[in-house]
Image (tube, helix red, strand yellow):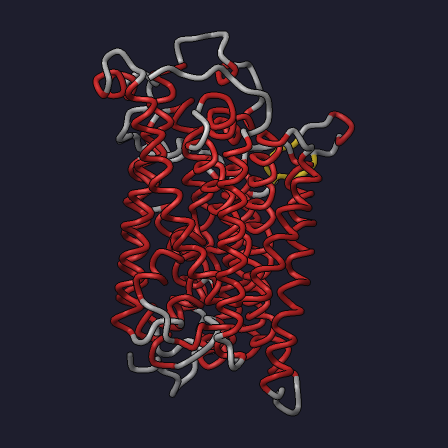
Length: 515
């Protein structure tokens, strides 16, 4: 097989036909799902009757599919396959979700995760947690939209702001029309494209290596001190086996157990058993996709890493890791396969964007609008408002993507920074409710305050007294020697400890619901 010479920043007509075919399939799925909707319950939760296997695929598609496809390839190309260690933390998080969180959600028949906090600690706790969720998911949605725009820019030659607007508009339209059912089924189509396309790409790259898989295995050990399994106990080093299991595990638990994007899908299953199956399947599919994309990155390194003149080896900023995949697809794949992988990356990122704006619309409606109304909304009015909120959050996600564009950093770095500081204390709040009996609303809120205080003191940077020097320093030395990924664990532990030990925050007669 002969490699084609690099093409310009555009795909061949056949490639664009494949991408267009995927877009048409998404539109048809959205229209089909919209015709099946007879109530707001269908729009928000798919009628609580979606197949567990479809929900399981949708969970991982929503959470990390675009990162798995684009970012992991770039990181593996430059740094090696040690990022696979994160799957240990993911697995630990999913097991805790299945054992601790899902029994509550299944029994209480709720629509959002934060309704549980209302019943356990009161409406203030619910509103704070839901507000933090909105900030977190808006940041994630903006980052994924920015990531998609980067790739589209490489494929088309359009500038990134124009690509942000194109992708954002597409996500708004089909997620507002089809609801959760359309999102879940398009996520399944997306994963077929991702897995099939990446396998084909790996086979193609390996076939061009003189030694085949032996060259890939040799390349695995050629990343300096970055061993596939890093046993270092240095808390400033990332990722290691320790930080993957503890720090990232807590981060993944917060995302998988308290984030409405995941919880909304658990609630769309028929029963507890189905939701547990969906959660475990999401981990298995996520581990598979991550392993495939890391393998692709290492194979690309074996193929091109020794060529100092190759575009992938240019001396560019760190953000270039986000463009390795797109550069490879647009410049080195044969016609047809390039279109499949282009459609896959669009699908991977779009699934995260549509889920973000749909879940925010659900949380706004259920956690803020309805509790403040004196009279319940009629179902037709509820459905109309949910669709309008979906469009609104699509616009806000576009704004977040433009902010991410202005930062000039790699997407994964921004994602961990923005989210890690926010999700830990909210996870601690849920654990206080589920694992303790006597903590009341005052103790919970004090614990939440302590959690965010610990994160701010330990991990936030401030201007020095001489800002004209342009130097940033730690406000306090509490976070020195810790990588930022530990922020979620620090915030969670501080919330649980302070909330659980606050004597005036304890009340009698408040227990946890029986799973």
